[in-house]
Image (cartoon, rainbow over all chains, first blue to last red; front, top):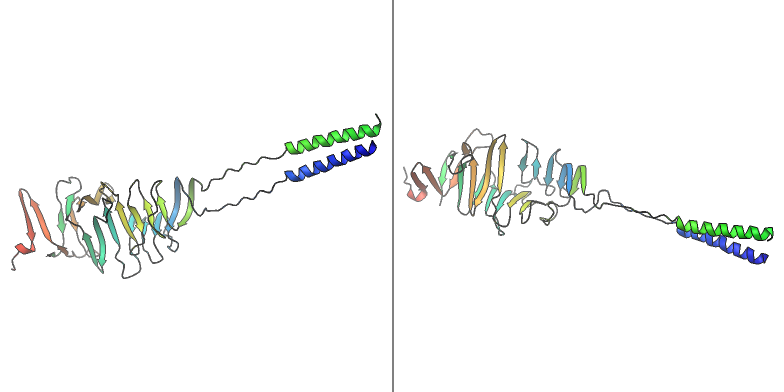
Length: 146
Length: 160
């Protein structure tokens, strides 16, 4: 009888120790700060750069493009836009779309010192407060071209 | 009951209770993570490409950024160094507005093929330091003067 009690006691002790060992957990948590991908509802930053090689601008500015880009939504004069980049061959533009095709109108730095406005029909200069009225244009020479 | 038996019974009960308690005390750890955080304030953010919309896709590859609502074509892209596209794929009158207090000037695609420039006074073409007016090249000039409208074009001009 004594031996039986000793045996039962030993088994219980072993069971207890084994249960305790099994209850120990190893938890590994891997965090990414910041996360490499994400969907945000609201995101605020002092400065944003879009492009792996694009430099940051000043506070309140967003820059984009490649390493030679000048593209920036800047805080100058409240809020301004800069386009283009460091290559002499660049012809930066603003495209206006109103359908799924290519641009409908374009304002582009066509070449050195030439800003082109590209339209399929016409450009109109109108009064801001009364858009039914036209406004004036002031230029040096007018070249009428065919 | 002998003392030994009593001791072993008590010890067995104690160990059994300990065993039960050990199982009962297994922790349940709940970790709530936000991947990514839905809101945030950062000092600097760099991204390869981005979108400011819950529905739009990416505008392109590295260095591009899209924004706007459904069917928007608003894009900052790296073409020609850096360029901008605005508007949407249907029924759009996209514009660039220049604000100076209450005074605004805007360049707007009014409808198909017509780009309007809205100004309060006049639209001028200057050199960079605004010391000289510069030239403009056109096909035709349509003028509207009271009830008299007309067109000036090269074919109608004579050499002076």
